Image 1 (cartoon, helix red, strand yellow):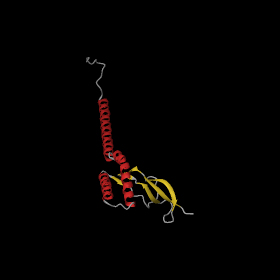
Image 2 (cartoon, helix red, strand yellow):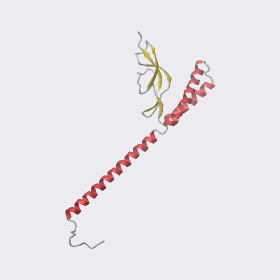
Image 3 (tube, one colour):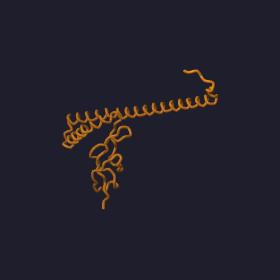
Image 4 (cartoon, helix red, strand yellow):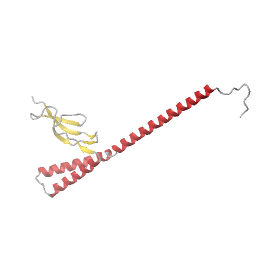
Length: 161
């Protein structure tokens, strides 16, 4: 560094205080930005963990549907024997495992139609139920916590004329 010349005056106290205040403000903003980023990453990580089981559950839905069809078939053929009991037990074990991870079947039957939870396939006249009430569930819907993984495919009551 060169020697200060007599014309180079030392910085004034006000100038040094102003620089100090600018650096302190920059430090505070940087700390706040860092804390906000840390909290955002924490929330995102928590969300990822909360919904991590979703893709696996979606892959299992076809197998669950087939188990339900097999169970219905065995029950309708009045073959309630050991095979039907075994299929029912396996079905229940899978549902229990999904439930431990926050995945549950949605209750749709006899509920008012809600496009957020139901996928209407058709309507059929029904004197028993008010219009737009789910009268039959064709494919079970599932939720992971509050998120719909698969809407229920349903038949709705149509107005009778």
